[in-house]
Picture 1 (cartoon, rainbow, N blue to C red):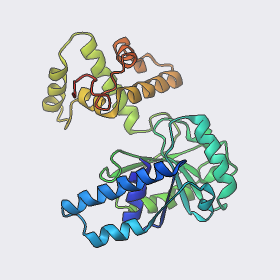
Picture 2: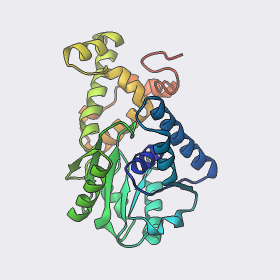
Picture 3: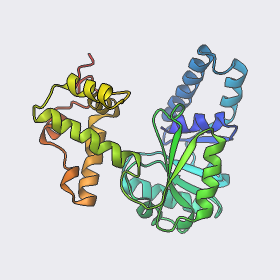
Length: 271
């Protein structure tokens, strides 16, 4: 996600710093961006000159202090509240008061992340979708103290990237897309687990009967069943509503290491 966000920003004409913990990770991120751009050249989307120009606007580093002149920092670390709060506290000490701090979390509380800093009015959620370079939507999530000025500034930034933003006015797990999408996927899992239909039949039914471009179970495999399961548990813990309860087949698959495409087995086999 970090590499995708960096590439998108640089493609939009922004000067970008791509920071990670280790040099090897920074190099991996830069290599991913270069490979993506080479593919764009092959597909006729950009020229070699444009590729070089985009890469020239991206600086890789492991030094967090280099962000002391950034106007906007977009965090895309692991989905762990303690890790995010520690990073935001460090950024709060490094970055000038006007710097906006954004988190790319898809489920965690913006308000709680913002509690680690003094500039709570300049913290927001900025949820990109994968793959970042091609997905047009960015959800902007207000924390309890996020200012309208902060939202307006980031909306302008998103527009400059050629993307569309929607504002989530209240900090709530899942925001818009995942709040609607994840229970839909979980219900498809319930439908299969209860023996109502087979995997292929469920996916075919939703594609042909509801006009979905992809079946729910193949989409779940693509997202990652471990990721999906973690999100469901966050919803269930937060809302205390049984409609967010994962089916026990789901938890059994996770225990077996069936995470979907990334492990070669989920609802479908990918070997």
